[in-house]
Amino acid sequence: MKRVYVNEEWCLGCHLCEYNCAFANSGLDDMVKALKGKPIFPRVHIEEDSGIHFAVSCRHCKDPLCVKSCIAGAISIEDGVIKIDKEKCVGCLTCVLVCPYGAVAQGPTGAAQKCELCMQNSCGAPACVAGCPNNAIVYEER
Amino acid sequence: MSEYLIIGNGTAAVGCIEGIRSRDSESSITVISAEEHHVYSRPLISYYLEGRTDLKRMLYRPEDFYKKNKVKLIFGRAAKLDMKKHTVTLADKQKLSFDKLCLCTGSSPFVPKFEGLETVKKRFTFMTLDDSLALEKALTPESRVLIVGAGLIGLKCAEGIAQRVGSITVCDLADRVLSSILDTDCAAVMQQHLEQHGISFMLGDTAVRFDRNTAFMKSGAEVGFDILVLAVGVRAETALAAQAGCEVNRGVIIDEKMQTSVPDIFAAGDCSEGFDSSTGSRRVLAILPNAYMQGRTAGINMAGGGSSLTDLIPMNSIGFFGLHCATAGAYPDDAEVFEDRTGGIRRLYVKDGRLCGFIVIGDVNRAGIYTSLVREKTFIDEENIDKLKKFPSLAVFLPETRRKKLGGVV
Image 1: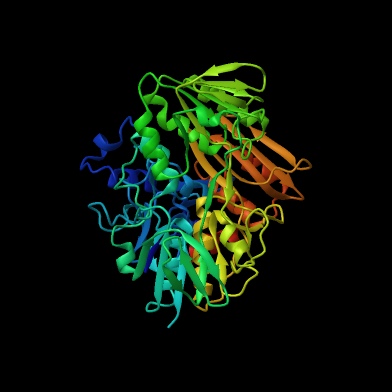
Image 2: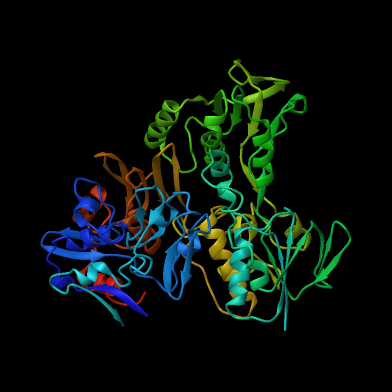
């Protein structure tokens, strides 16, 4: 299955992926309206530390701790993609506590959210990858 | 073809069913459930009272779960276990045979023998959906509620009903709230937050005697109440296991394959006593993620697989009135504590260059990185600990480790 991977040596730390992600998941068709002056809740984030940068998003693990740990039965795997059912999620953040990658976070409504590979929004393929200016994030089979 | 029997219908049972079905799609699975409900998310009973979920959404698995997994669900109570014949007899005399059995009997509220408890009309425990529904019926906007126990169950109950009652007082013999997961400093922060939301506390004090609507406290104080919730603690349900000759301590003793000391009997979840890898000692790890993982491991092994669980640790993510708290591992007295208080609290307990436990209050994002460091017992140098205490980051790993974590299929 195709997943999002980061090539650390190519990442400039420009954070464009975060903006593209937040926009893609906003449900709006105007980036300015979607993001300007608002707190954003991207599902990918850049980690940086003394000269290194890299993007982190859900690894869609084969044996995911978040799915096993969800106290609401709100996280499931569909064709390899790990999904959070926002209606069922009560925002306890146990998934945040167990994800070894720090790839799950609380979203704007209090429910947990994470990368679902843009399958559930109008992009259909990861917007972070499409907008990365240096091919530092790729969407491919490994 | 084998006959699998699971006693209990909670999270561990679901894990067990899914574990069995990952290897064996045909053999029969029977589940005996004492609660007459489809499997629901037990920790959500307080969220139900708060209105943040409902009976439909709180189902732990979809409505077609049993059908899809070819599981026969029987409502009843297992009364007798005969290991010579490999049979279980239910309270209604129905007899069921099995090849492999998994005990997922969970735990039940521990209610101390308080003098005069029987004179209290509206008294509840808070463990099951039926408990929650019964408590809901008693709530009125004027109710004065006394909760005995300032642990996870008592305080989640308090949060769940806070908007629906007149007042809530929580007492506990311990000198702090959430004493099983928070140290003194962090407990004080959480207590203050709860007080700001109208919860009153009587700590280091507990009820010793009741007379109808009055609790007589150890300190000599008297507390008037309309509704009493007893959340003192829980006890593992081990009676059946003991009857079958399984070794039992505080829970049914299991090994890393979830096998009990009696062949063909496995146990998982809150009724079992496994291994806490953060302290290296046996312990009942009564938390939902462990119940699922233990159940799943048991199921795989019941179906002839070779699955082991050796890295279970205590961990909790819990929030009250919008303030979150994430904890994991152990807080040994001889650990060095690294703390950061910018925008909340982060306390890292470090021993021998390894993170052995942590408490985060406030921004819990990425706390899972800490949890994985505890679980995997990763060596961290001091410079990185200083970074980590400010924020959990994958940057503390060596580049090649990180490449493996982020660059491959995991």
